[in-house]
Image 1 (cartoon, rainbow, N blue to C red):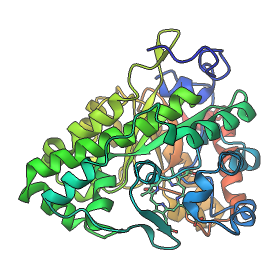
Image 2: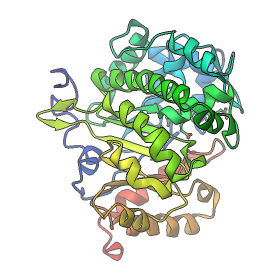
Image 3: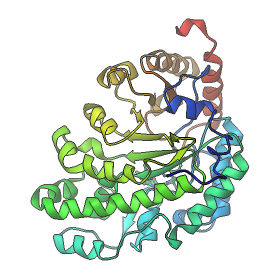
Amino acid sequence: RPLPADHPLTVGATASAPLVQAYRGVRPQTAPVWFMRQAGRSLPEYRALRAGGGMLERCLDPETAAEITLQPVRRHGVDAAIFFSDIVIPLRLAGIGVEIQSGVGPVFDRAVRTAADVDALVATGPLTADDDALEPIRAGVRRTVDALGTTPLIGFAGAPFTLAAYLVEGRPSRDHLAARRLMHVDPDAWARLMAWCADVTGAFLRAQLLAGASAGQLFDSWAGSLSRADYAQHVAPASARALGWARGLTADGAAVPLVHFGLGTGEFLPEMRDAGADVVGVDYRMPLDEASRRLGDAVPLQGNIDPALLAAPWPVLEEHARDVLRRGRAAPAHVVNLGHGVPPDTDPDVLTRLVRLVHDAGADAALR
Ligand code: CP3
């Protein structure tokens, strides 16, 4: 399906942006760079806006969401914006009782523990990409891309496993034991839960892309608690189903690029690509040249500066960042990012300096 005629990729505003080029496997002159969790808690201008209202309410106010999305682009000069929202927003919009507690994460009114709980959840019906409930998201995306001009906006969604891990536990957990138990105690109920999560999160991603995002990223933050076999059998089909809602959206015949990121998922990078991703995001544990080798040196990569090093003395961080750039050359193209989100107490000036380093390194012969 072609994207709307006024979409930034269709009108040509973002089609030649370095980020979109790299996501499509064409290595630009300088590596594009953005940071997961670049919007939010590490920025004083965010904290100033944050007074009053809950996190999810901020996400659902289009003007606020657009402003917070733009803040790191203005401040750091990153090559992409990522839409300020949260992976649990589509659950809230589907009618699930969920809040984000500061310092804790998503907390649900009730956990989904049994087959009967799953059936009650599924009965609340799916969300569709043209659902009225998603209008605040579409409005926020439209405002954001109008202000961004030639800088691409990345839309995102949580992967079905990460959402299911929260739903089954009812809150954040360390090992996601309740979710991994349900997977094996009642595989049919698990599959129904995963399919529902895939459709809800897929609708959220598809709505952002149709409204103006130039790329999409699926976050599977908790898939690292799974074995490769469980991932392949019980999770990957649902992630493919979620990405399927975003696949096939095209501008001039070229698809909107899709990124698949997981934390601690080095052992199943090929399965993550095969779920329908154009780009694989790599966490800080695995060097990019090794990740690339596991993918046949055929897949553009995103990553993977260790967030812990943002607090290190500059020469230490600089050496690490140059090493990441060097190893990223094993892949057909490389988008620089962190290996997980920006820690809240990060000095924002370090991020700005890192963007400058990556952009200046493009012409640096020492890297080749
Ligand atoms: O800059 C960006 O990356 C865009 C915005 C974004 C947020 N959450 C904003 C946010 C994105 C892409 C997410 C995704 C998300 N949300 C993930 C996947 C990425 C990851 O980190 O692994 C997950 C697991 C969540 C769920 C979630 N939301 C958690 C665990 C938390 C932290 C709770 C806390 O306070 O420690 C949130 C809250 C959240 N999401 C904040 C922001 C800016 C903090 C809100 C605040 O304190 O004001």
